[in-house]
Length: 335
Ligand code: SAH
Image 1: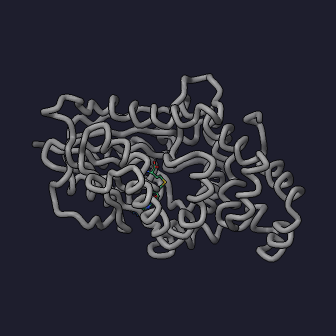
Image 2 (image 1 turned 60 degrees about the vertical axis):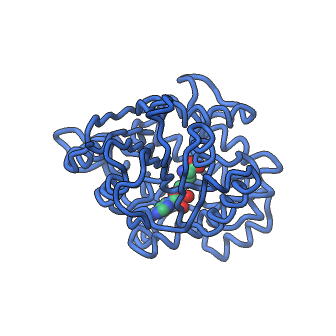
């Protein structure tokens, strides 16, 4: 599948193969499919409405994702300019975890390795279990989705890791943990869902132990130029469409994260743009969604999941335009 695949092509392909979905969309309203009204994005972007949308989105879509892609619900890390194979996706996702740990300088030394970890926005616990096994650490995962928390727990029991790893439904912005608990605070592709980025980073810093490392891997928009107050209207329009489908509030830039971390007096603040390393990812996801197995599970899953699938080409466009930046930000809580 070429990266040039457009939303309308994906939509018409899905519709052609699925009379059932055609009926459903006419009920939902074709205008929504064509992404004209942005009011839904704005409504979804606030408070409890947003949290409910996120929870329902992941309740509905996590099963299909797991069937096709396994228990890591995040981008893979590839060599820039390579292409991704569906067969190689798990290795690329594990590589993403390893690249993030290495970028942040997390130590493997038995005396320094992280022994208490929080996985903020844990999905079905792919990272949590990986980190628990790698470091022999105690890991606590939080997600807004009850379905994810249950599935994460079941997978963890099946891997006989239940004495090390546990999950609960909780809000990253009001974490159910006392201050200063964790040597590693891990947020893999959950930051983009947070409506208040400052509160998000403050909460990550609060639960970090003194000297603890914070890793945020997230979707950002490009840094603004000194002459700019905000993104261009066509850029905002594109991001709004993605927000609407993936239950995301307003985006921020990597520079905004660095600024927030600095204002909270966090140390060793580092950032990198890994957009080129994740570029092969979305074409591979679209390819897997367009297989017969992918399409049938998509149609069985529900409208929120279908809506998410239909905007996948917009992620590719956003990366190509240099608008979307796949970003890692790491820092350390002072001792
Ligand atoms: N980190 C996981 C999942 C990424 S998907 C992985 O890499 O596999 C995004 C996750 O963020 C979902 O689990 C979603 O429930 C969670 N999330 C989004 N907003 C959240 C919030 N406010 N509090 C807790 N979790 C949140």
